[in-house]
Image 1 (cartoon, protein in one colour):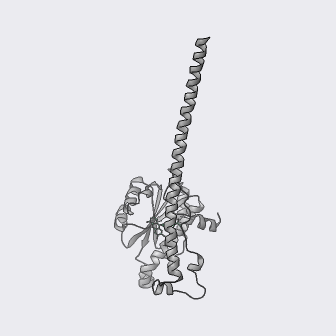
Image 2 (cartoon, rainbow, N blue to C red):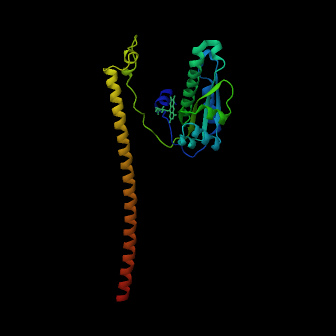
Image 3 (cartoon, rainbow, N blue to C red):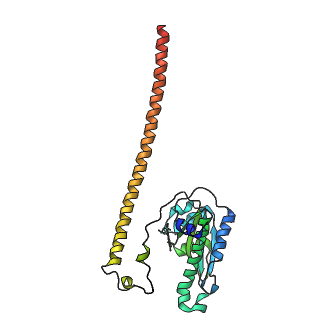
Length: 248
Ligand SMILES: Cc1cc2nc3c(=O)[nH]c(=O)nc-3n(C[C@H](O)[C@H](O)[C@H](O)COP(=O)(O)O)c2cc1C
């Protein structure tokens, strides 16, 4: 798969088919994480593969009760190991680089999964201590996120994204929009526009769902009606035959 296809087609998947993920695909995803870039090549990550349903349930609970996760047959918990970076890179290394390293690995794993025909969702809303207890994290390590992996049972559209011109600058950073807070102007207006569009999109999605539900129910009813008509026609036909037979 072309890398741009994988990038553009990847979506966060929150509905999964009841199908196992082949073990060799899990291996390939781990391999994609293994070769990710990391600060000073310290590779301060551990990837914990979880397939056990009970553990998945506990982890979904510890992820802010995101129960949809349980359907994904494989989780990879990405654990950041924080005891090396300070020595090499000082406070910034400890505060930032481990998180960046893990994010890079997570992204590579998501793209690899995409290329293998799998869906993923990176979940970071975690109660860290609970997750730590479930997978026995020890020492200077923290769970950075859980990658839910499985065959997708949905095909979400790309959620709204800013346009390139709203966040990319040539040679200089037009940072006034965020350094001084949002002042009235192009950025603030655009943010408002995006918020409104998001709200509108939600309304449209509800309406689409309602239309689908009505369509499905109408079809079911129509089927029932047609069935009854056929039955009636059949029994009517029989009655007619019986009457004719009697008359003869
Ligand atoms: C750091 C981070 C944390 C996230 N945490 C969650 C999460 O806890 N639950 C969830 O359903 N999605 C989570 N997501 C997925 C985002 O909601 C998703 O990437 C975003 O809505 C854009 O959608 P897309 O991935 O389909 O492009 C997280 C994504 C990132 C990058």
